Length: 549
Image (cartoon, rainbow, N blue to C red):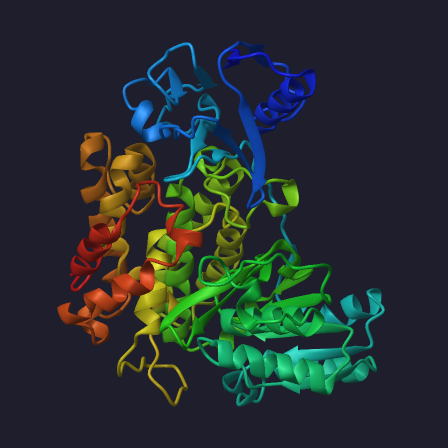
């Protein structure tokens, strides 16, 4: 379909070309797309200006355009956006009705307008896979010295936590020994907090600045260790004016990482976060009592050494909680808003976010990871010494991390408030002197309610996930998808000895208000929900998560 902009009144050729260029840039096909034309009319003048890095169209009569939602509700074939009742004054956006099956490419991007604004925004048209290098196998931890030598790195910071330091044969001491043998100088930072905070991130950054300079970093531990190493790497390399400058908007400014950071090699010892392949660092913002994060492709480790031997040092309850994190990674990635329905399209490829919406590549990783978790996590609960099951779950965590190019949505968005507002809960298996709700636990407690809520947005995907979790969907209708998947999630997690919903970790219904308020700012993830969600929906989701069995 040709997009036609009718401009009434005679205008100069320069104005004419500017209008044409602007509308071409707004189109998903890019500025060189020939499918737009501009026709000069003879009634009014159009003025243009640049505001907040977005192109804004202002009519001389100062009437506002209708939003897409108002003017396009009844027309699935084309969208008409007009500023008055004259049908000659309009432009069209080419669109097709979205088919809810797995073929993303049946839906072209829609030209949309943000609420209460005359900014034109169109959804993304591409996704990208930027992964870390991964080496998997028993014993690969000891190859870290060879990798550092290949990078000509002779002075590194080792990040870990007190739990691993306290274990005599932990991978931390193995790495220290092999670095000594290869004459690679290192300093050990072992103060990483379980469930890190802005305060602990700042402490790690101080270590980097005062004990350095370092040429690289080795992170040995779970997601908390790897995320802390990423943050310390960033803040010590490019100190910001304010700590929140790099933090995801709208909580922080969401500034991009200015340039390359120091090489980071990640050695995971738990099976869940997939942080060895992501550019995300999550933490508790203590002033707000919720989690948030920093996300950028430059924060990705250059190498993940995924060694099954390293999970032996991980307590079973910690291992299970980490597995629940990857369980939700997989489910949320597969059911997230499709990449070509996510807005806005980036102004340039480098600004495409880390979490981009579900896409054909992330689907492969997410579904395989979900299958491996379903088969192996209960086996570890029954027999913590089952090395094959532990090895499969470690690999599944990396798979799920690769699938995180899609991103996560409501379970993670809600979990940031759940863990941030913890009262007195102290989980078994965690060496901590303060109350915490482990990340994987805080994520999965809302999963039955969340996926029942999101199922109407794409029943086929939710039924596919339910089938992987053991459901017989041969005689199931699509309107049953939410109930089926929710029930399968309950059955699965009931085997894993986790608390019975939010009430099991110390919350009651009087806490729902603050949990909702802590979730509302988590736009980075909640906007990827396949079904739009508002404040009232979050109240209901938290209510339905108080008990789950």
